[in-house]
Amino acid sequence: MSFSIDILACGKKTHWMTADIERYVKLIRPFTPLYFTWVKCGATGETHSKKTSATLSQNLVQNAYIAGLSERGTLMNSMQFARWLDEKRGRGKTLLFALGGAYGLPEWIERECNEFVSLSPLTFPHKLAFHVLVEQIYRAFTILHNHPYHK
Image 1 (cartoon, rainbow, N blue to C red):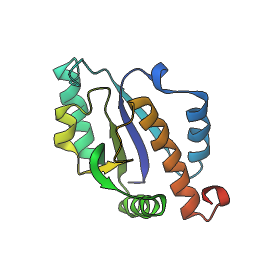
Image 2: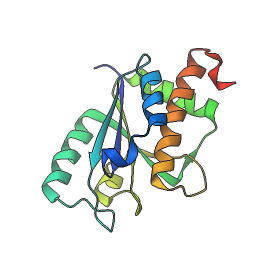
Image 3: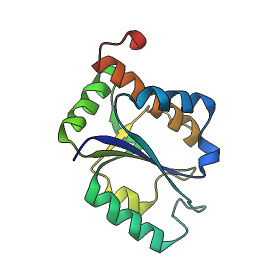
Image 4: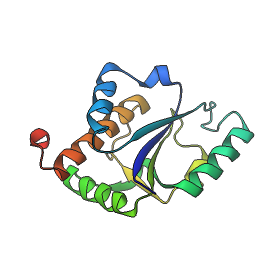
């Protein structure tokens, strides 16, 4: 199995994908495949459909190492994040980042997470957290490949 990154995000694709994020996606793809999975979440953070939750949950557990994004997760600087990403890449599994909506991660996703990662001790709006995550993934690959972007 080869390494890839998937970002599971609560919300609609049109809400998340801005020109800036599309630019980072194009920059990341030469380093690794990058995919997105969009889940419609309700007002409490739970997905609207139990069937959708069960199907996604089964697929996630079997095929990925899941890192939930949470302000209570492990806090890393960019160099540490690059080393962490490289260690996950060495496992050869899909690395799935789970990013919640306005009410955080749905409980069923939290239960499946292998660990939690913090982008900051601050709480960000989910769209900003998505942008920061994609940029940090690109930054990590530039660090790992000695590209001058990260300096």
